[in-house]
Image 1: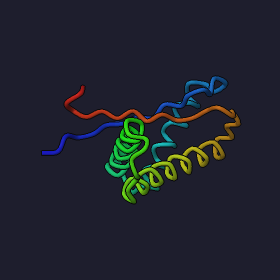
Image 2: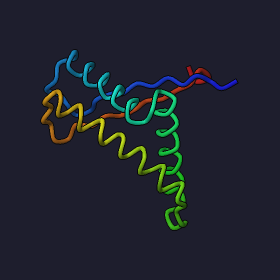
Image 3: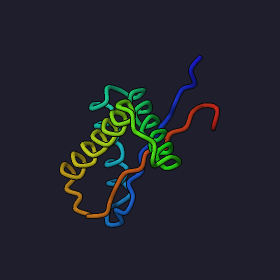
Length: 110
């Protein structure tokens, strides 16, 4: 049986927002990611694949990259960038250095 994954977003470096605005932005970020990637399990899968590739690249920077690795990186980065831009535009967030982090854990790590 597959462990159920849970994730949440946190908006970083956006100090001028109220707690309610920050929470709304984080919720909207998740909603856009789920829409772009095709659901909650797809968000988790895409993020975990991206993270795995980034970790492998950090450990072995000179190894050739496979097309699957390039696709995983492009898929996540496109979705995250799209979601970030959509939320910032919709909520009129103008902070230059603000960004979202995604935190994923599963039932075994709670």
